[in-house]
Length: 241
Image (cartoon, rainbow, N blue to C red; front, side, top):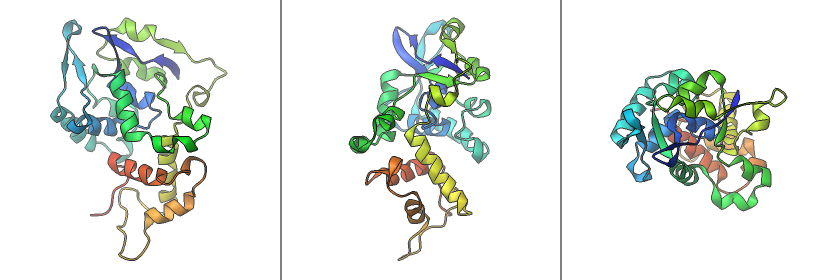
């Protein structure tokens, strides 16, 4: 792992490569979620594609719909992982403005109404890490389509005594997602084939909520519901048809 400054400049504006977003968000926004958000015109965020000569053109939501469809063809376990086979589906040379990423993150993933209940460490975990930990073998891949000197100049090797956890904590949202999925699997269930609730009876969601409790990262009246819906939106939780 190396610590990489993911903010670069295109047309004198601060932007980040779309392929870097999973690392910037600590895994909270994976490749599938990125494609879904950029395919949704209601988000009001446009990604751009760098062309020859550093000119850029906007990518339309319909183009990200195609990216979604390609991601759907990958094995389910790979769809939201930041690895070469998945990131390759995200077009190289695509970027969004730093302000746009902040807006997407705050609108879709940040429980601002519960912020007053968080500890200072939990609030820190919700920040975006623009100096992100990226595996050495993925750096050139993440910055593909942008000028190579920009990408290399941004690299700072992580000191040997530090671990990825020390330089970039697991985000609170990622921890919530992981705990929910782990609890579902512990019950012997497939997160992508959950039984729908029977009328008058509590279902899997209620069982998971009770198992996780309401302390720590689960403090707040709406935290669990938002985490559950976030996983549904990303396709990590699916009901049987």
